Length: 167
Picture 1 (cartoon, helix red, strand yellow):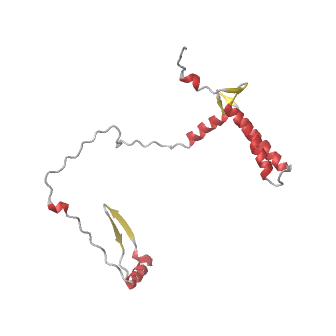
Picture 2 (picture 1 turned 45 degrees about the horizontal axis):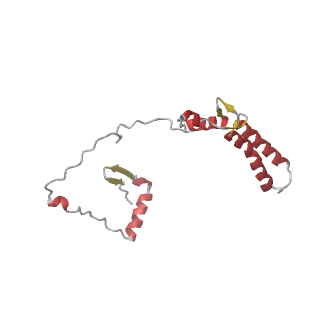
Picture 3 (picture 1 turned 135 degrees about the horizontal axis):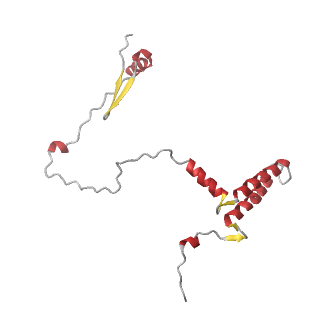
C-alpha cells in the first residue's frame, strides 16, 4: 500500500457541502429556521402567528444570510470577527526592557558567617488602643475642614498630617 504525505494547506480548505456552500454557511442559513421556530413557540401569543414575529424572523433571516456571503474566500462573519478583534486590541504597546525572558540567573551563594543579631526577629511596636472618648474626639477633629487632613506615602510607611485646630 502506497502512503503519501498530505500538505497542511490541503487539509485546511473548508469542505463544500452543497455546491459552493461550506459548513459555516449552511449553519448560518439554518440558524434563522431554528431560532425563528423557538421565537414562534416562546413569544406571545404562543403557537399563533403575530406580525411582530414575522418581522423578527425576517430580520434574523436577513442578517444571517448577509453574514453567510463569501468575500475573498472568507464568510462575512469571519471578516467582522477580525475587525472587532482589531478594534478591541490595546491601543499602545508598552515595551518592557525589564523582561525576565532569556536572562541567566546566578544562584546566590550562602553566606558562611551570619551574625546572631541578623537572625533575631525584628520586634515591631504596637500602637496603643484608643479609648471610646479618644476615638470620638479624633473623629470630630477629622470632620473639621480646618484640620487639613492629608496623607503622604513614602517607602514602607504612610504619614498622616493634620493641622492643629484650636477649639
